[in-house]
Length: 121
Image 1 (cartoon, rainbow, N blue to C red):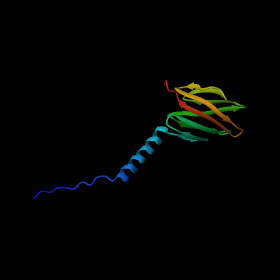
Image 2 (cartoon, helix red, strand yellow; image 1 turned 60 degrees about the vertical axis):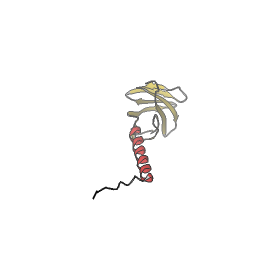
Image 3 (cartoon, one colour; image 1 turned 90 degrees about the vertical axis):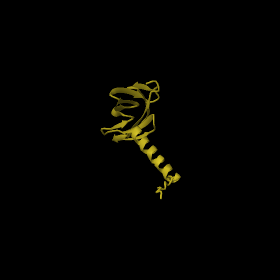
Image 4 (tube, rainbow, N blue to C red; image 1 turned 90 degrees about the horizontal axis):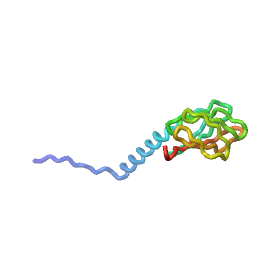
């Protein structure tokens, strides 16, 4: 008499669900966003950070910290990857620590910047 164990092939639905869960977890780890006084919207290579004015606002995005240092009129000072930058609305991207940083908008309540990985870095 021969004992054989039956192998049940994995369900395609379970396999797809596991793959999707793994991808979602991977994206969350890659984006690695956290914030205080700010909100973030991140993809794989770029994040938009909206800082609240009047509070100590910072966010950790793409493995670096971004802080709002100050804002006056349409000019904003931020610190990204340890480098302090002064940005104005409509200005071309400024490089900081291998990232391109632009100022999207400034209102009475918020400052919105975009931080993206420099392709050449």
